[in-house]
Image (cartoon, rainbow, N blue to C red; front, side):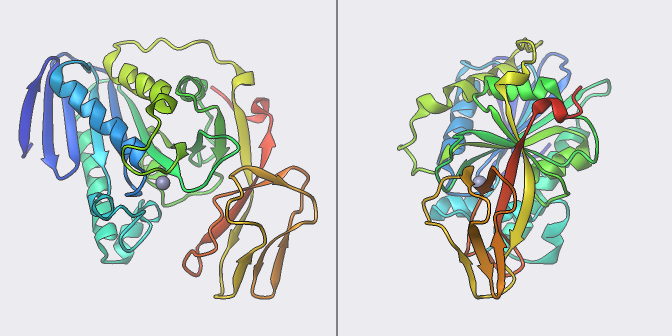
Length: 321
Ligand SMILES: [Zn+2]
């Protein structure tokens, strides 16, 4: 592999490309773990978590025994302190990067290559693949930490992963019911990894994150890469709230309005019949009791998602393994 390698206590950390760090343990391992951050450049807490894990590995405080790939996905956006330079990078995976020439299109392709190369370079044998793509959200959330479980194509949901996420403090899960062009769906679909978009809290500038709020997640990611056998508590269905997507509301015309204040938190519940959005002449009313809104953004490009609505479903309803 090209790049510079640093010898660490339990293996070698290689800087193979800008923002691409591969840890190869000395001893045989059975897990390949991808931890990515900064797909959105202004989401600083995940960058601080990855930075501190890398420092910990370099100074010996963290001694991984599993293969690990760390990715700083969008350095150009980090530099300008913005979500993105030209395009939302988390809409450019699974081949969507081929439809444009912006730096984000090119970087999404490079990130896919980094993940492919990392998984392909693993030693032979039965291995488990993981990818946690770390984010913080633009707005407040009624459930501060939540993870998006990518579309499984009718495959089962994993108790082990729900338990791991709960141990990270992530006790709310949003199910995606269709293919997407997010980084986590790419790794799940293309590489059969257990992959998640993990929202760890609200966006703040560098240095203003309350790191104690992320301590459980940091500790679990460290254990995931450092423990030969990760011991997790028994699955408890009562720990996790699960939400299913009810509707996707796209902005199709310039004249698009969301009919609630800008500071409404993710997962806020609306009443049946309330007006959520107008897209030109088309009105979107709340259709179900307990319908909640998530990821509202009236300023998205035409044709993109401006709002999702979700409803809670019982965990027991999921096909679990
Ligand atoms: Zn994000």
